Amino acid sequence: MSAKKRIVILISGRGSNMQALAEADIAQAEIVAVISNRADAAGLLWAAQHGLTTEAISHHDYPGREAFDAALIKHIDAYQPDLVVLAGFMRILTPEFCRHYTDRLINIHPSLLPAFTGLHTHQRALDSGCRVAGCTIHFVTAELDCGPIIAQGVVPVLNGDTADTLAQRVLKIEHQLLPKAVADFVAGNLVVEGNRVKNLADAVTDNVACLKN
Image (tube, rainbow, N blue to C red; front, top):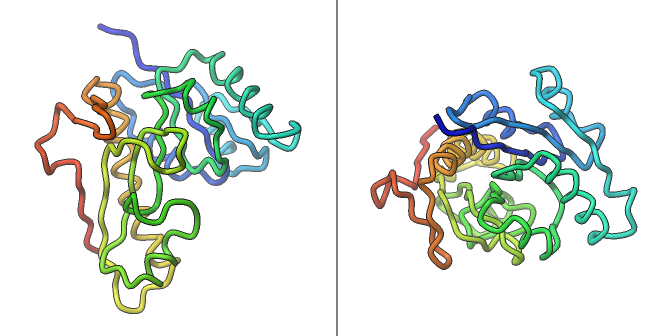
């Protein structure tokens, strides 16, 4: 039997996607560390309570993004990860960091990329009159929220939705898609060709999920 793929998860807050990934208990995957840039991140406590190794590395302890990212790389690489997952890690990463983890760094973003990169995605979707919204899992590149897309999940925008109610529905599908994407990575099913990801395990339309509730 092949060795388990080693996964480091980066968080900044409660880490609900980290929790979903841990609870999925993916075969042949091992979460070797959960790291946050905030010592008070609620997700660190949850991870520690569930037997996961945790670290807090504050960006305030470094003079700039480059110095922090260089230190973060050293901490991450100490765990010899096969995959690094950004699960609500609220930092813009330097190009050097992104290049260091090319094709083994994934992020989950709460919009249907390429629409609404950056912050406040749900309110922007409402303000734009979108009929659907959703989330995107993608490989990370130096250009913000523009890396090759692994999977996307779609929810309807309902009459009377607020940013909060829309976010709650999108989060449910995030919790479904992230473990599946990680499982596909671990199984070796994800092949990056230019800016497109082929999933060898799926039919053409199987990497788009819909949720109605």
